[in-house]
Length: 331
Ligand code: F42
Image (cartoon, rainbow, N blue to C red; front, side, top):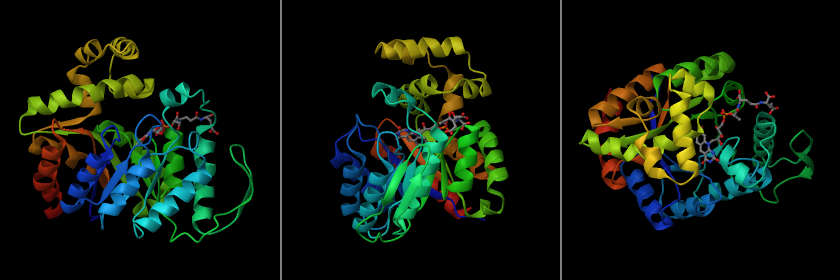
């Protein structure tokens, strides 16, 4: 049986010193990976990762996820090679098509997302191998570009994917897939596509559940903490995903409209239990274990504990490390 890995998502909305503290704690508590999200309006992903690299020794670390529209893939190749150097070979790269709402704010068109991710991954790999690249692609046009230094190694590349074509691409091209979902229905859908596309490569693919997670001994507190995150997930979900979970589009539009006006009270008040079930894992340690167990049985090889973690992040991380992870390490 594959040994399941465990990771932590960090969103750089809090001071970098606090994120470093959490990453150090995650390393001390035996987690395997730490992923830092990438949005222009949060603290910078690579500066945060560098700070974490300098204070940790073992944990793997990387952006989860960057995108080729805001950050040029050549820049990403150099950033990830530099992170690998400063962390002594611990870098991992998460890359995806980018967040539509954020790109719209920057007037960046979300054109050909599959092609953009595909060409970027191919080019980044070549640069990490120390090769030169000339490409007349649809997204990238490059004339004999290369890094002026020899990267330590070819860093593993994980592709963020939920939709069918991106899942297929990730399964064929990636070393791993970051699936931003928490419910078994989404994994049933995704893993079927991944298995068909990956064929014999499936045993080498790291299938990551990038969850929205909230844990507390008091279920009500875990629930309370997860509501704001689920409101944003619901507003950003595709029609196909909402329909998969039988969520009324009418209710979703109330939340989306409220969020766009900054009326968080109305948005959060309209989050239903059905939405919480569909888009998060929350509850007591035993309830969280039960939910994660379902994903692992479906073929997930790596769990990332994503926001909010709980009402108090350090307490939640302690519960995860002391009660959740040991359950899976011994079984
Ligand atoms: N986005 C961020 O901006 N920052 C983050 O920190 C972040 C973290 C993150 C973590 C995990 C994860 O899974 C996703 C994360 N994301 C983050 C979101 C990520 O950047 C992507 O937005 C997300 O993964 C969306 O991927 P998706 O699988 O939904 O794919 C999108 C692009 C999609 O619509 N795909 C469809 C499909 O079927 O795969 C259709 C693609 C499409 O439009 N194809 C066109 C066509 O004609 O068919 C064009 C074809 C072409 O050539 O490109």
